[in-house]
Image (cartoon, rainbow, N blue to C red; front, side, top):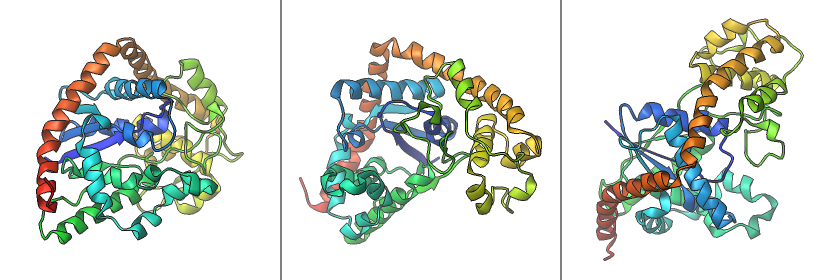
Length: 340
């Protein structure tokens, strides 16, 4: 049984993309793996945060984990900043990673945009801290979305270079776990852009705190196209949507993928179910499955957030358990490198 590590940023407004791309998969993985799930608050401060809001957002992520079905007695739920090994190992990895590797990271370019010179050094070295997050626990598997594949490749490169530099087979070469039909959930208003909390339109996303009426209104107003829903010719040999269909009918593909992920039905089965139908009929069924899945999570999250003492206790206990795993690893790393 491998060890799984993954994390979610406490940046507020958790949405359907966070759930389908990450949290839902966390729940299924805990059945057959040792799982460590982290609220990556140190990653969050690579951009400016309001400290009070950040503290509340950390609790919100922990609540979303538990409400979705992660068992805090079975899996470890904690905040990244509780375990000093993350920061210590990140510095050592900063001295292993090469500037050329970091210069190729597309997410930094996207997030920094035209203000690259004003971006924090932390944002630039974000992928190195992510490598430390994973390798501080010798995680063998990491569930990641498509947008994080490049960062995981960097973590693998750092592990390999560390092992080579010190002539020791110490860090595992972590494997990505890509799960489900909706590993990259797109905006409800623009199927070519990722669903994001930063989008100015709240109708672009389904928030995990949305009411049933909110969900229904957003799905009803979700952007579509004038054609009937696609048939099986839209799928390739692996039963995924063909690239030309993704490009020409982005909104249709996005909504069908969301239905597939929420209903746990294959893409092929979903396409067969709705082939030739109008979006008005499809949206009614998409709304039903969205409400059925998300409403219980929202209800449980709200209940949990009313008991901050309980959530704080879960995080504190998780931090202690995470430390027990990470401290021997960072101690060994220091010895390998020649540090006290």
